[in-house]
Length: 316
Image (cartoon, rainbow, N blue to C red):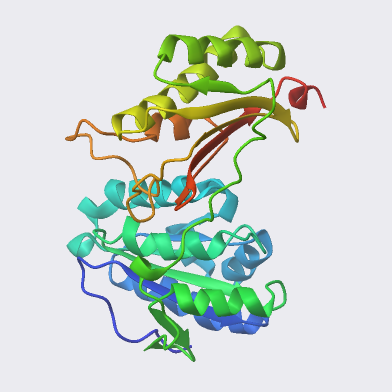
C-alpha cells in the first residue's frame, strides 16, 4: 500500500478528506496513514466504525495495539464537543510527539446531519494552531452524494489514490455560511418572559418553568445557571432585551432566547475551548452543562437555544 504523500509541517493543522466505497479502499487509505505515523513516532488516533476497526486490526496485527481505536461518537456529538476533544488530545500528546505532530483519522459519526459541513469547516478554524494531521473518510455506501460534495468544500485537501491534492471545491472558512437564525417564539404566548435587564426575574421564571420538568433539584439549578450564563452573555454584548421561552420538547427541556438585535458572532463560535486569559469565556459553561446549544444571528436578530434531557426522558 502506498504511503500518503506530502507530510505536513509539524506545527500546522492539516485537514484532508478521502472518499471510499469498499473495505479494500478503506484499508488502502487508513493503513498507510496509521503505519506512517507510527514510523515517525507520532501518536495515532483512529475514530471509525466497529467494522472498520476489525478490518484495521486484522491488517495491522501487532501494530494495532500501538494506535488508539475508538468509535466516532466517543468524541461527542456536537461540534464544540468534537473540536474540544481533538484539541485536548493534541494538547495531551504533543509533548511526546516529534515536533508536536499527531495523527487523527476521524470518520463522521452523524450521517446526514445538516450541520456536519459547518462542523468540518469549523475544524479549520478551531484546530488551526495545532499540529494535528486529520484525515476524514467518507463511505459512499452510507453518505449521499450531497454530503460528499459538502466534504470536498469543507476540506482544503483530498486524498486520492494515496496522494494528497488540493480540493478545487474548497470554500475558505470565513465564507462558509453559519446556521440560519431560528424563528422567534410566538409573540402572543403567555408563557414567554420579556427580559429587559432584570436578571433575578428571568432566573425565577426559568426555575419555575423548568422545576416540574427536571429532577433532581440540582438539575433544575444547573439548567438555571446555563440560562443565566446565556442571558449574561447577551447583556455583556450590548443586548438588553430578549424574549425567553422555556418548554418541553422531544424529551428535553428547551429554552429559547430571542432578541430583535443581531449579535456579532466570531467565526465558528463555540467550536474551541475559551481563552482563560480573557475575561470573556462566552457560553462555554452553558455549553458544558447542556446537552445541546445553538447560537444564530442574522439581520432579523439573534437566537440562543439550549436543551437538557427532561425527567420523563430518563424514565423511558
